Length: 248
Image 1 (spheres, rainbow, N blue to C red):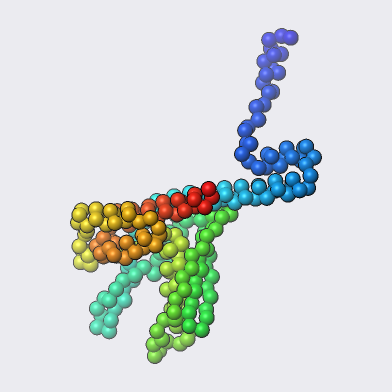
Image 2: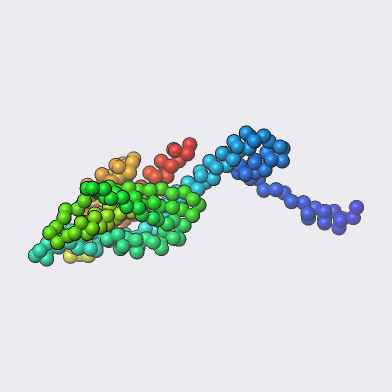
């Protein structure tokens, strides 16, 4: 055999990629060996579990990437009393969606909303889905808003639904809003206030702990971009740890 022929024969040798961790390759091997129906059913169940686990991992990674890019969501909508004095500010749902929908799409995430109305309550359910197939949901049930003299029943339900949708959407994505950050509205948080807030958030082990710690912060602290970013990172870490413990 000539040297040239040896080289040609070597050039067609293909080393198969090791995908032994993929149940699909095991199914192919089982089919080739004439496995029984019972064995094949177990193999397909194994593949389904593997695919769900992979989809969950992809979802968690997409959520972590999404939250790392979250902008500060500002409360720009004002509620005033009859004298024109500002009572409080909040971020309308359409404003929140407008600021995050591009980042959601970038990371393969989408959302849908379902609303259930009973005699005295409204429940909104927000579904967050990843292109790999995994989805999670967040629910917010709220008593019907106080009806004013000029408010019809459909308007009462609509107002309550808007409120519950906003909080369900924010909870589903781990969004924490900050107040409008102008000098007239708020003084900037001091370095000491920032460090104190971050230390308090660092001690949170669950999402419930985090929400409680957040509620105790001052308006100045809640408006600080670094504190908001730090809180979102902690929430993402808590979610990842919970998902890993469930899959273990």
